[in-house]
Amino acid sequence: MRTRPLHPAAVLSSIAVLAIVVCCAGASEPARGVAVSAAAPAGQPAAQVPLPNKAGTLHFAVIGDNGNGDREQYEIGQQMANWYGRFEFPLVVMMGDNIYGSDRPQDFVRKFEAPYKFLLDKGVKFYASLGNHDSREQRFYKLFNMDGKLYYTFKAPKEDVRFFALETTYMDQDQLKWVEDELKKANEKWKIVFFHHPLYSSAGTHGSQLKLRAVLEPLFSQYNVSLVLNGHDHTYERIKPQGGIQYFVEGSSGQLRRGDLRKGSPLTAFGNDTTRTFMLMEIDGDNLTFNAIDMAGAVIDSGTITRRK
Amino acid sequence: MMRIIAGAVLAFALGCTPSADDLQRKQPPPVNANAAILSDFVKRVDAYVTLHKHVEASLPDLKNQTTPEAIDKHQRALEQLIRDARRDAKPGDLFTPAMQRLVRDLLRPIFSGKDGLQIKNEILDNEYKGQVKLVVNGRYPDEVPVSTVPPQVLAQLPKLPEELEYRFIQNNLILFDPHAHVIADYIARAF
Image 1: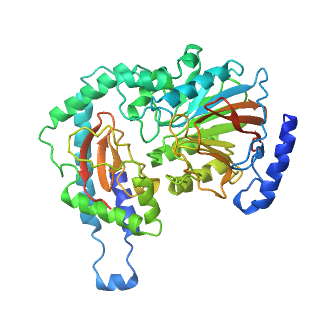
Image 2: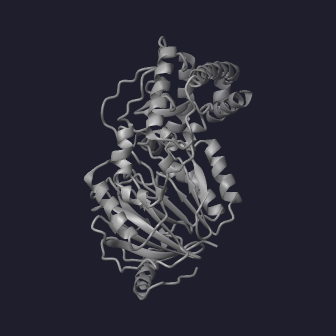
């Protein structure tokens, strides 16, 4: 395990994390996986770890459960545009529930193209995974970059990173075999998997999807996945590393379920169920720095992850 | 097709392995009868898929990277063609009564097992509370999110071609045509 803080503030947060790990040793397993240098526990102000914003590194954003067309989705879109001005990111990964309810052509405009118009105009590419509210036909929508596939993989334009988008409302044997085959043959340093249903979540509405976890987690563990991104629960949650893997729930980029996170959950490293959020990430070699950002543009959680080796 | 049937029969046999006492009291499981039911189901599914492909072939190809207008136009045109082609469709056309009983038998060990409640919760999901009227050959209701189908449930059921999926609406098992957004058939109160 190796921790390399990128900012003096991270030293303080490392101490905080060390305290959490000591107190909650039974709830997480950081030993052979990602090393996390991160912010304060749930309910406490976070010591901010700024995004390094170095040239040549991979920048990307994360949104989930965003496509409701409500004012708050537009406000998050505006904050993403604001941040883009000082932290350009060429891609956004979407955790599903991209278009809630009706998905007639005008809905794609109101619930996707308009809220993120600034980014789309800048050429930012959105890569979607499908949620339980999404029509399967969204896979043909060119701005979701799924190339007609329910599950797919792509190599990031910078750094040694490969993303895997899964379709978890219907995890059949064909897809499981595909997941294993693709993870096995991928030789990138960073393997990042994103999909809708969280394997770990402290939210009361859905929570951890245990049956899905039973089939996916062993593959993630075996094939050296470092980071898993999910939505479905309308909260933001950074999970304590599980089996050496860092999990996030980012399901509040449009929807929000206030008060849904179970207080005192042993899974939670940091949680928020009071405001909408999105995430920005930067990968520089073996390190990934993350910021979770709220509707006011403020960083509510941040930290650094070192990939599994 | 034989692989599908064999897998489903094996799953059924494993799920219903009787105890020694049971063996003394009962006849062996009716594997041949179940194989015939599954074979009949696969034939019916194949016939549906043939029809689906036939009517879909009359539409322009949907490109892999296209516009919402093209997607919507294609989906609704396909829905209409399927509904017209199956205008006499009725419950039980695909899930025959025998298949309904077999599916319930296949699913019973899953839902009554130690993880049964957890699996039900993952399917039911508490997301949609309204009443839903299921109509064979009708459009899948736009306001109802598609259910999660846990992999352990899928492993118990005969594999389907991509033109059809198993989904749940509440505790009803739906045979869903995702390209056309049509309910091809359903089993009421599947668990």
